[in-house]
Image 1 (cartoon, rainbow, N blue to C red):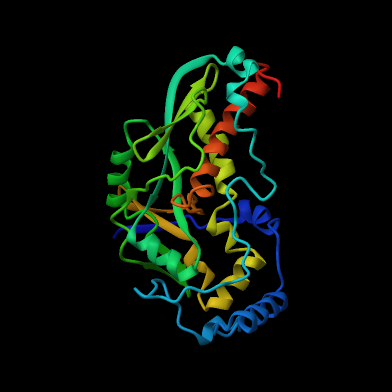
Image 2 (image 1 turned 45 degrees about the horizontal axis):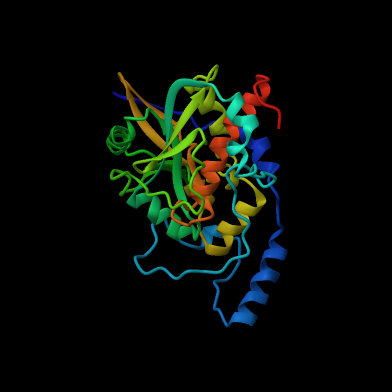
Length: 295
């Protein structure tokens, strides 16, 4: 008999989740009442009693869009500030830049199941990660084969949703194109990062993932803001904490999904531009630490 081992340990990140800004439910209700009165909206009741409501895992095809006073999680964090966009055109950067020869791709991907989840939450959600420059489409095939993110845990058992087997790389709509001297360039549905001397792809991935993780919906679901948002729309916050089943001999390894974040890569001036700036910032901080640049 195959055994299933669940890796459902979020305790190491609970502190990060609770450090996110919080808003009490009474404040949420007051804001909703003001919005409803001002705009004539008919919003759903804000009772947090989830057990009295069905737990939707997929939105209806013509779901109503709600205006909610929710502060979504943000990649890079709330205190993140972009560097000056013309920094790569300065004489200081051009003199300090030494290409290392290695490259890595950043992709933003979605699927029908994730789209359904986003409509249910009324929050744009995509997977943001990295891979080899020539592996973006191969990575999509791997995500499809694994039905990445299709599993969640609720009411004492694991559930599997449909629609998580058609992953694709999203377009990236940039308001600001990268500078001609930027180490980051635009690829086919990806951003290509040219790494500086002394920085490995693994080092870039670690630093980039830390910034992207700050916008993760699974961490946000464990905050008061996340709980209040889910109570307002009547969903179980556990559907934000996704898992993927991977085969492992006689076992199935159930791994938490950590790369689904609140971001919209199709909204120019917002999602994709922020991802670009985060990637450029990782390079700049590395060069400053190595004494190659002073900014």
